[in-house]
Image (tube, rainbow, N blue to C red; front, top):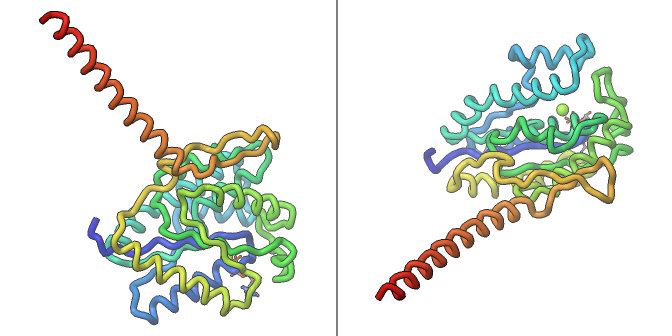
Amino acid sequence: MACKRGALIVLEGVDKAGKTTQCKKLVEALQQSGHPVEMIRFPERSTTIGKLISAYLEKKSDLEDHTVHLLFSANRWEMVPHMKSRLEQGTTLVVDRYAFSGAAFTSAKPGFSLDWCTQPDVGLPKPDLVLFLQLSPAQAALRGHFGEERYETGVFQRAVQQRFEELMKDSSVNWKVIDASQSVEDVHDDITDLSLHVLREARERRLEELWKLCVRPQVSKSRPGGQRWPTPSFDLAHKYQGMLFVNKVLHIFSLNVIICFHFDRKN
Ligand SMILES: Nc1ncnc2c1ncn2[C@@H]1O[C@H](COP(=O)(O)OP(=O)(O)O)[C@@H](O)[C@H]1O
Ligand SMILES: [Mg+2]
């Protein structure tokens, strides 16, 4: 990939945290300062898979929970060629929800682990920055009633918030938490500062793959049914690779000692 690629910036958070408002404002601000930029939102409801998801969210159809999770993931995967080609051309992508929402929403349902929920999205383009718009469910409720769509209930949103908190323990992802209870303009200023910084960094860095080097979440013994990400998971994966390397060096060293000892005895 050419080095001067665009950045992949994702906005996450519970419903009504202000993601869509802030994605639009960020796109406008970057455009005005001369950066090529495009907004993407998930689910992308215009595709064949997106239409199935849309009907499900609008409660016009029912789908089995595993099936719908995989459809959400497939909806992201089908956008990957478009995303990669835009990034390679130097266009920055501002994304309204991504794999983190997928994992947080499904794992908030009974019987789903965070581990299972992250697997279908392993290898997606890894965001350079994930902005988590932090807003308490009580504050979110003040921003208007939840609509008619599936998942729009206070109880479910609280469970989703907890899952996001688990996901944020994964230090292989560049999470930045934004206080979304501030005014729209103050939130925008925080987001723009962080994004401009990442835009400069991304130009010189390769696009990575999401959750590829992660050690998978483990079941917490202290919280039955809960999961935790080993922290920092990225470091653990590297430590493991480091141990393999040391192991190889020791093997070669021992082999040398045996050969030398053998020849020494012969002579
Ligand atoms: N910082 C803010 N303060 C107060 N209201 C906000 C703020 N950001 C967004 N809103 C309002 O809250 C509602 C939800 O915003 P939206 O951007 O659609 O959230 P999301 O996409 O996260 O669900 C909208 O009516 C929007 O105008
Ligand atoms: Mg929205």
